[in-house]
Image 1 (cartoon, helix red, strand yellow):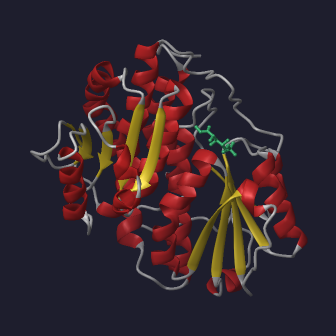
Image 2 (cartoon, protein in one colour):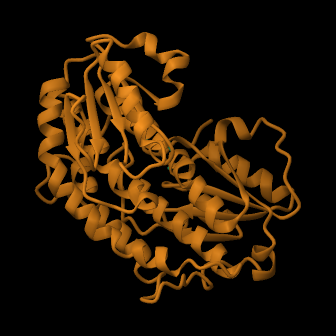
Length: 360
Ligand code: F6R
């Protein structure tokens, strides 16, 4: 049921705070301990000695993995590879000695994620899945499954599953860190404050995203840029726009702009820049904005800080840098939603797409 919303997609974006709350509340204690022992049956001795994590997924689930990669590396202290399912299955991946394999899937039925999981199991690799649909194939196949408790996601474009996957990946990073004796409690406690912040972000940005979409929905090409934790969000923002509004959008790491995509920029190609003022390379993202401006490109900035050089800003609430993906993705999803709305498309059932891709 759409509960008064025009589309499932908008309803599901509005539910993101609840989805994350349900996913974390019984798994993080008040004093910041991660309570995943019952769900992860993999031996603690193994977890202590993990020397690499390999994440395989497709589409938005892949971007969740890419977003969480630096967080996982920081708190687990091991190298993390994030791989696309359809490539991984035909690639001779060299596992390390104590490799943990993680499959991420909302539906739990994606063929291109399922096959790599089967292959990893066949090689005797320890496997874990992060899945939203109970008792789905990918949930059942892995040695352990940590469910995202996002609730049913009906809209083809994935939204609340993404933030819930992030929540599980962050908890997993902290869990492994905890087993290795790292101080993770402070960050884990901060994660508990995220649902409220997602709600605030939704309320503060929904009208701005709509207004921007009204103004920008006739453009045919968009560039999305970000650095660090904002880079995978640029990819996800561009994917959302492509899927439901059929507008060509490319996501890039901002520093890569000068190596090619800058040639696209003119007054007809707006750029969405995602930048948190506390990120180490914030000033470099602003330099990118100057380069865009000097080529007459329009800029939509998603940031906690206004910048004079840009045309539009979606002002974000203050958030700890490492936790920004949970809230910075919200206006990106809302912008794509309203773009498709103004263009009059079938938002919950975009052309050529299915909710669950069970064929190769
Ligand atoms: C994007 C989208 C797809 C899925 C992808 C993986 O909005 O819906 O890109 O994310 O097909 O699906 P799951 O997560 O079910 O394996």
